[in-house]
Length: 98
Image (cartoon, rainbow, N blue to C red; front, side, top):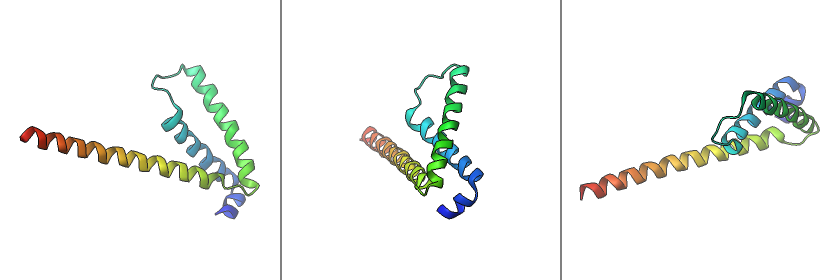
């Protein structure tokens, strides 16, 4: 995988940027929307940061793999919250019946 991404740097850059954007939006974004100018500056800075991470990826550091692990863990947390919400709803319905 590392060799393939080294041979295709544009695809590696896009994957890094998409994963970085997803992690930012799910973990670090505040509930309120930013003004459009700040949003543009933020995404430009993330694009520059993705370029730096691409350099690290090219130097044989597993940047994409680490971002994939982070996204996977975030998805596991979402599944856990979903299951807990269903269990609470089921327990509330059972308590209401009795």
